[in-house]
Length: 147
Image (cartoon, rainbow, N blue to C red; front, top):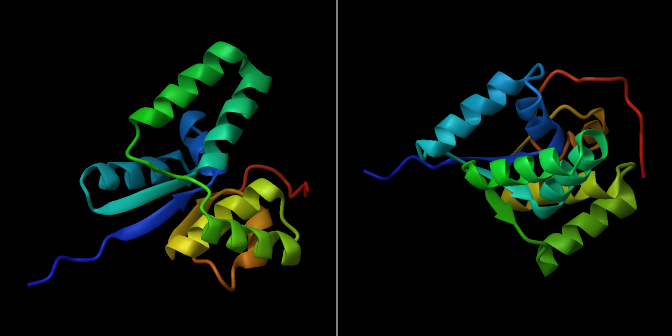
C-alpha cells in the first residue's frame, strides 16, 4: 500500500501576517500548520516572505517585534525555499506578464514551481487564478496595486 501524497501549500506573507495578527483567516493558517506538524502536508515559504515579514514588522512595530517574528518563523513547520535558477525563470515570466508586485511574483512563482496551493489574503493573486490553485483567506483591505 502506497503512502498518501502530501498536500503542498505556499503561504503568502499576508497569510503569515494574518496568523501573527490574529486576523480573520488565522484559524485556517493555524490548521494548516498543525497538519504540517503532523506530517499531513508540506508548507513552503519564499525567502522573500521572510524578508517581507521582517521589514513590515520593522516599519510598523520596531526592531524587537521584527526580530521576534523572524524567530517565530524559525519555529514553525515551514520549508523556506531559496531562489534557484528555475524558480527565477518562473518568477521572471510572471513579472513580465502579470500585473503583480515583485514579491508576489516570487511567492506565486514558488507556488507554481511546487504545484502547491497558494494561501493568501491578497487580491493581486487573482491574475494567476487560471494557473495556480489558491486558498483565499478573507481579504483585509481594498485592492491597492504596487509594483
